[in-house]
Length: 118
Image (cartoon, rainbow, N blue to C red):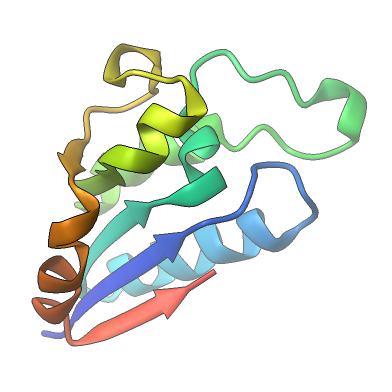
């Protein structure tokens, strides 16, 4: 079994890219691969509670994020400096995450066989 780390750096609802990435995550997880997500830069906004994309004609992805556990995707990491720069705290997020300082990100990435950036 390969270990996949998906790195999420883009804002939510900036097009269909997030939906496509989530589809790839769920597909990998459905085939019994170990999948983890790292949220950095503007990607931390993807986990913000109470998003309202109604006016954007895009699907609300919060339900998909909540379904990750069903697919055994439980390792969710957020870069500490990105979270702080956004003004968010862990209580503002949809799911429990492990907060990782920027200096430890490369070590985290080395622990995965495949890194998939968004």
